[in-house]
Image (tube, rainbow, N blue to C red):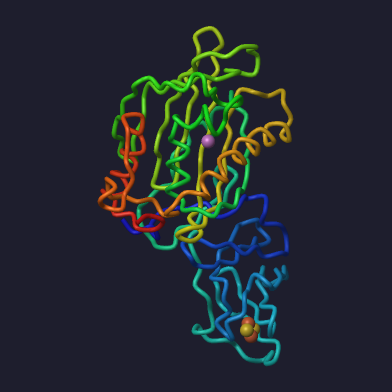
Length: 330
Ligand code: FES
Ligand code: CO
C-alpha cells in the first residue's frame, strides 16, 4: 500500500481561518491550505511555480472573479483550481495553463482537514461515534511529537503501560496484571476484545477504582479508536478516536476526537485531561529508539522482544507488514 493513497489528517478545520493560508506538512511534503469565499478548503503544494516561494506566506483574496491565493513574492494570483489568473507585473497577460499549481483532494470530517495525495478508492478511517447524537464531540490536540506515527498508534493500543506512565490517572502500578484478550481481524485493521484495565476512577461519577473493559480497534495504518465498554448499570460508552498525521518518518501530529457522555464539563476541562494524559505519554514516546517502528521480530534482527500482553502490538506490526507500509517503520 502506498501511503499517498490514504486520507490523512493535517489540521483542525477551525485552524483554516479567513484570508490566512495555513502551512501543513504530510509525508515529508509541504502544503498550503486556504478557504475560498464559499468556505471550501483548498490544498496547494506550498511552493510557487514562479520562483519556489512558500505560498503559505501569501494571502487569500476574495473578489468578483472568485477567491485567489496570492503569492507573497511577486503577487501572482492562483484561483481555486490552481490556475494562475493574474501577474501584477503584466496585467494584460493571460497566464497559460503551464502557470498553475496542482491541487490536492481534500475533505473535512471529525473536526479535521484530510488530504489524499494520490487518487484511489480509499475511505477515511471509520469513526462511527461521530454521528451518535447521544455523544458529545470534541477535538483535542494537535500534539507535536518527535516520533513516528506507528510508535504513537502502538502506544495507544498498549494497555500494559497504564499503571506506570499513567499511575493514578488511567491505571495503578499495584494493579498492573492484564487479563488475556483476543484479536479479531477486520477489513481495515483489527479489534482487540476483552481488554481490561484497573482505573483509579472508572468514570466521572465513581469514587473508587475498578476494572474497566475497553474495546480497541485499529481503523487504518495511522488511526485507532477505543470504546469504553458500558457497565450494565451506568451505560457509559465513551469513544476516543486517535488520528495521527505522519509529518515526517520521525515526526507526527496527533489529535484525539472525543465522543463522550460527559456534557457537563466544559471544553477546557476535557482538553486539560487529555493534555495531561498525553504529556505523560510524550516523553516516553520520544525516548524510544529507534523512533521508527521495527517490524522485524526478535533482538537478533534489530527488532524488539515481546510478551503475551503485547498481542495488540504484534498484530499491529503484522498489519503494517502485510499492507506494505513503509513510512515511519524500519
Ligand atoms: Fe511566486 Fe514570483 S515566486 S509570484
Ligand atoms: Co498512554
